Length: 371
Length: 91
Image (cartoon, rainbow over all chains, first blue to last red; front, side, top):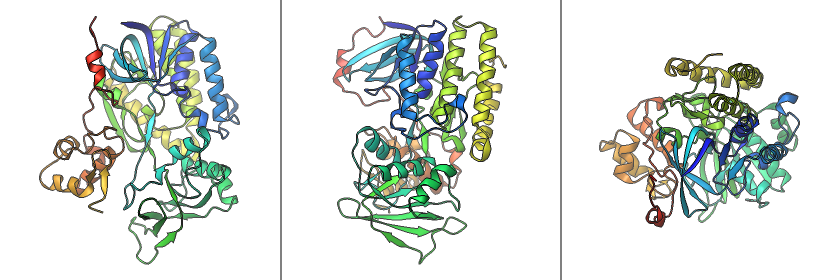
């Protein structure tokens, strides 16, 4: 039986940030990740981040990933890669499979679940044809594996994932034939959207995909305009000659482990559906189990890192590694950062949604000390 | 659309899922047991949300009132042989 005071599940921005804060205070931390490399999605984020300098604005995601790995190494944090967590119970026994073939049990005093999110599918005739894929998958192909998924792309969804991946597909040498958006207005940050528009990519707002065409793989797509009630308008169909359809239609938090650990959930559509209830310290309704990053509601790497820090500090403080005063001071600082990230046209909506989780958490988590 | 595959792992169509609901399935768990949709290799990662949406459409209830499917260990596909190699899990 392996035993660690703190086990972090997921070595993405949230998990690594949590591990770093806990280890800084002297806590012994194990980080587990199913992938062969740590960093989560950071190493495919070749674009610069937004926000203020404290949020690493202007720094590329992949460079933030390198900084986090450097810190993880310097602090001597143990990282198990190629390790899939298959189970966890309320007493914080974790069951994992290492290198696809060895079963291990790990006893933890505190668990931080930073398992991330998965891409949403949408269904339309032909959606299972080869050539239809998640936009995030296409991004992994071009930026991590250096493989172009296709030559002529249709992007479904104009949110940040849609426009950022479109731009990176252009950089990788593909043609983006169009970006369709079901809503009447575009969904991404102006900076990313404008870059794609300047490159000449057409946007189709109030449009959806009617079908993917092709016998054995995608050879085209039929799109159609939508009225104010989201119904297709007959006669507005248009056929685009493309070979790849990328779906940037949102993400769903990866919550399986939190469910089987017995965490209580609430439904917040703006954040991706069912999310575990948590308090200001990212502690769930199961004492000693924390969540951070996309599992607690789909946002961005910058907010994921701040949530990870909250969880890491709280878990370490509960083990006596930070004083109550240190915990309080750092927690308030981080909330200032989070509130600064969750403002403006896009951020305010996320902040309101997050406040709803915290409000439920306040009622359900009796031991929570409110700062 | 009805013969379009919805659960790719188990090759279950949208029509089969709608039929299960019309025959009386009222939850994602019931659709799973009835059709095997969501019980394949990916354990519903792709089709679970799509099943919830169809259930919401067919039953006329909002998505937030759809109870998600139950998750169980192991949450990842693993080799069956691993079970035979596990010794003294409670040591």
